[in-house]
Image (cartoon, rainbow, N blue to C red; front, top):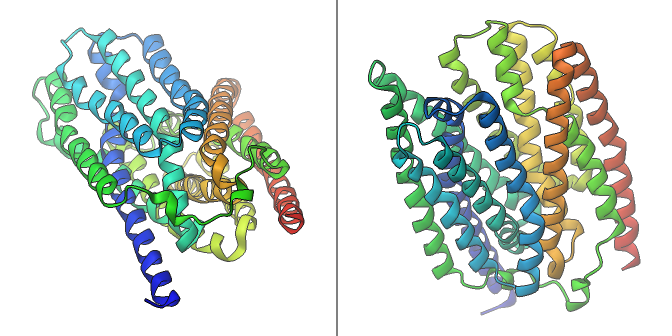
Length: 407
């Protein structure tokens, strides 16, 4: 077989692997994003107070990000990419249908399962992204993560939509039982997630072979450009409000009926999916400069959502928020894969995601407090921090180019 034919075969295999992992993400997001859209109501029906709901979901998200640092370190030291990915998905996917089994006042069990589900995502996240990054070296980092993110967010779009239909069809029945049925039905995509994952593991047992980076590139030292990149991404995360703040404002302004709110999230996920494809394609042509473009577009979402108080403006703002999410979930990962060397990549993903998640949590918390004072202060904080991220991304790009030239 000629070198060209062998190369084409390798590229096709890498693309097939990325598509398989994208399908895993699609079924996975149908499961946990669908669940996330009804967590609050279900916990309330199970007897949890508002403070308990806030603590359980907030602590779960914190664990889901903070433990990625540990998971990434373990993965890089043991090189057990598939093991960590599978263990994480087992916890991630088993916890959600198990919520259907809790007793009517079993909010303690429900809170524990939500935290376990987030822990599962933390365990598998660095390992899974590292596996995808290996294959993405053959097709383009932007394209590779964009394909995965498109399928991922298509699942995030379908999950809440399916539950919306179930809740509509079962309207008038026992509410707690209806929500329990929703979690039980989410067991179907959870099983499909595990089946597809195990098939991918059997077909591609060593995805790291896709990445032929030289041994010299496996230094344990993280580049200075990675530190600068984390600073830029952290500023972006600080100003990027979590979606519950948006739905709360839309609800308080009576812009749509409360039972339509899940559809707004589905719409945001659809914008996310389409943006991921576009910016992933653009990343492979322009590199990290694309981060400046995507941040400039999404930076003004808060102005439209929280300032104008009309449905049309809110829809525009939500679409811009979705574009920002699509960029974050595709090209932010692509940039980590570009900057961090092969042998240290799971640690890089873990460090980056932990810092990003903590800043997102702190930013959303602060913006919630600013909203209570005056929504305008939320808008000012959100726009300012995201705009600051733009020149920091530019500095990162310049510094990385200098490092690459020096290697």
